[in-house]
Length: 258
Image (cartoon, rainbow, N blue to C red; front, top):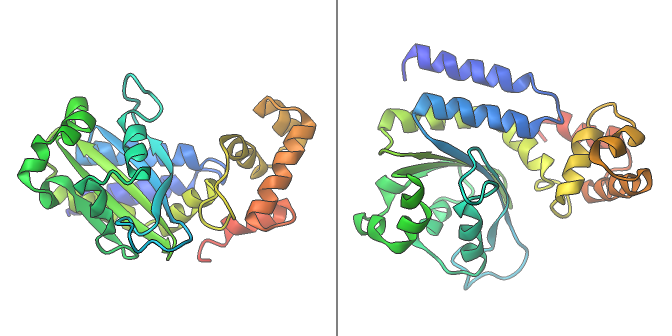
């Protein structure tokens, strides 16, 4: 990687750190847009993966499930999740496509994996590829997995209308590897790292405002909720994260190395 490209990535890292604590979604969008521009990708995703409790000896996915997903570019006719919503349904039903097993290679370690380099040529002729990737213009995909602990991983995916070059894969890998604090922040904002269960969409909206100086009344106004309902969401958020106050909640974000 040349010095100019490396400096561009460093500037993106600096820009990420300028976002407020409660702006993790906006920061993730900025990161994905910036890296798509650098690596000539047309779309990107972020996924928070968690390992469920239980005995999964017969589960090829070893208990891992995608618990949260963010899509950069909307895909018609499903602007929120596009084909990925349907893919997650197949994942949950254990209708295992070979592409589902790629993230299981080296689970628990930082890793990069891609479709064109690790799946056989005939997979790109399969109905699965054509329906969920080829149909929307994706020729190749690169994914970077970042483990936060033994039961939680952060994954970024990038999608291109051509085959990713080695240089582009190296660029994406370097950019995603150097921001452990941000992976942790994303997982926290979805209730996937220290919370007892994932946050609901409404709880996530309340959480973003809780991480500011907004009063509960202001949070209620911004979220379009009654003050009493907002208070119940605040209590639920505290309970899920195992804290008793805003100060305790904020400490989870400030303790980046924890």
